[in-house]
Length: 192
Image 1 (cartoon, rainbow, N blue to C red):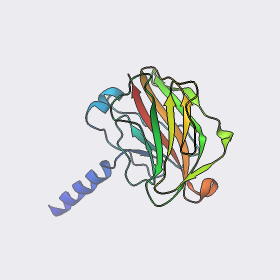
Image 2 (cartoon, one colour; image 1 turned 45 degrees about the vertical axis):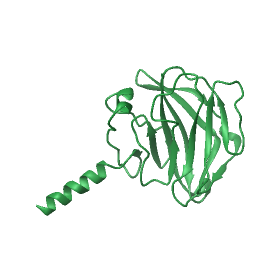
Image 3 (cartoon, helix red, strand yellow; image 1 turned 90 degrees about the vertical axis):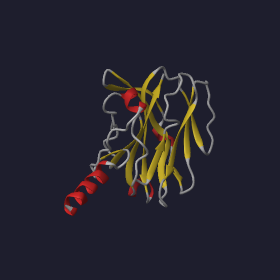
């Protein structure tokens, strides 16, 4: 009897891992209850766009903040955004290990007819940046012609029509861009 309870608890713990994590770890998060699932359908998608990444981590769109991963890409809110409302996507380390990334190497995609199409993207040749524990970096999406870019964030001029979107970028965890583990970070956002 104790063995069955232990096996059930272990299975529940594995299924209960938050978020959607793909790649060598191979653990997929379960469905999230509530209105997020209703906006994304019966099973929220966890797309992977970067074939060079070691792992893909999704947040938003029914995927809660992943546990047990050293990187967090946070969408703005749980509720869908109003079209034309500015918002920010925030990258931060979740452990004591720094993250290295190219601030201008990002992509916004829209889900239409079960296919992701590019809406906006940055310029990958803009260099690298490292954020250390306790720091963060933001991508500010705004319909304004020239949203502000500074040391703590990149302004993205984009107006998102109602729909489902994925903001993605790849960050290297630990030993710089060439030596660290690469995490593709995807934030799913619903706009109405």
